Structure formats: C-alpha cells, structure tokens
Length: 277
Image (cartoon, rainbow, N blue to C red):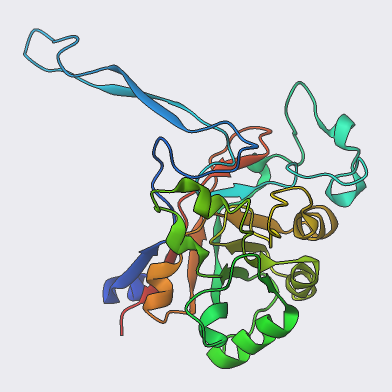
C-alpha cells in the first residue's frame, strides 16, 4: 500500500531536534560499584604494527568490563528475592548454561517512549539532595506538581538527585558514597513508581536507590520492588545535569541495550530528544 500522507515523525525530524546525551563516557578508573568487574580498554593493535602494501594501517580495541558499569540497564535477571525472579520464576532454574534465556537483557525491547525528568532538588529549592537523603513519595508528588509533568503507565521516569555532579570528581570514592551515603528513592519511592506503571526508572547515582551512610549496597529494597515484584527495568549512572539545566522535563526517551544473550544487564547510551521550537 502506498500512502500519500506525510509521516508526522518525519515532519518533526525535518523541523530539527535537540538531543541530550544521558550516558556517561566509559573510561579506565571511572567510579563504579565494587560488586562488578571494572572497565578496561586496551589497543592490541596500533597504527604501524602492521602496514599494508599501499601504506594503510588499522588500530583496534579490546574491552573487558562488567555489564553493570557506567551508564547501564538492569535486566530482570539481575536481582532475585527469596530465590525468585520476576513472575515467580525460580532463580536457579532460570539460569541455563550460564545464561538467563527468559529474563536476560536481550529480552528488553528498544525503548522509544515518553520520558519524564523528575528534578527533585530543584522542586525542593535545593541545588542537590544531601548525602544519604531518601527521596520520598511526597518529594516525588511535589516535583510532579512543580513541573506539571505527571508520570503515567509506560513512561520512563528519570530521577535527578544532583549526585551526578560528583561522577568526575578526582576522588572517585565521593560518587560511590560508601561512607557518606547516596541520595535516592527507598522502598516507598519505588512503590510510588510501580503504582504509576512506569516501564523503566533511572537515576544519576551508582545504585539508583538511597544508600544510607556506611551501609554501601548491603540492602536494596527498591531493586526488589521494581525488578522482582513489578518487572520494571532500572537504569543507573545517568548523566542528568545538562538536561536539567536546560529545564527540559518531558521528552522522547530513546534507549537500546546491547543484545547480550542471557546477560543480567547491558551498557547503554540513553538519549532525551525534544523538537526545536
């Protein structure tokens, strides 16, 4: 069938777009959870190591990293509770030949969805949330009212705490925040998100949720509520300062994980896309 109409999306593209990159650069030594293998990048072949007869030369890379390092998405296989994954699946039996065929990151479809930035500290009249601060449902409600951006079913909700400003701090331990704690939602905030039926939720911190001072990643109730109980994907270590500074709270959110068969997560480079006025 041939259509003589014009695709509305193509019209938007012709009008121009502003794209905010929400992903962090991947580099050796970047802050990360101590629970995951570190990022490593090397060049096994450099220019000049082998030169073709016509003078051409090529360099190539090798990467070694965990799937939960840098900006990444958690698949439903990532967290279990009382031996169960989302949907009640037995966590041990769900793993077959070292992979999770039904809960792995390859099952996450590419996302082109409505995204909402919940700029919590701005709504609270602060530059950033304090270390170890738990973002409450009341804080999220206040943020939604202040911005006029309700969160609905199928949306991707991104929560800015302001902690992302520490990602490139020379003292990498500040962003990890083991001693100081890290701001984020707790169990109640996670239920607020689940009650609204979001497709995915993300934050500018290393573990998405509130980490009390000195406790590290000892207990992660928001992961349980979202991944295990609700089937909601989690995106961590987002770069949200630029889009927040622009005052953009609603956008087309674009994300596609690597199709790593049966893996528990994947590096991602999410985008927030808005049309130009």
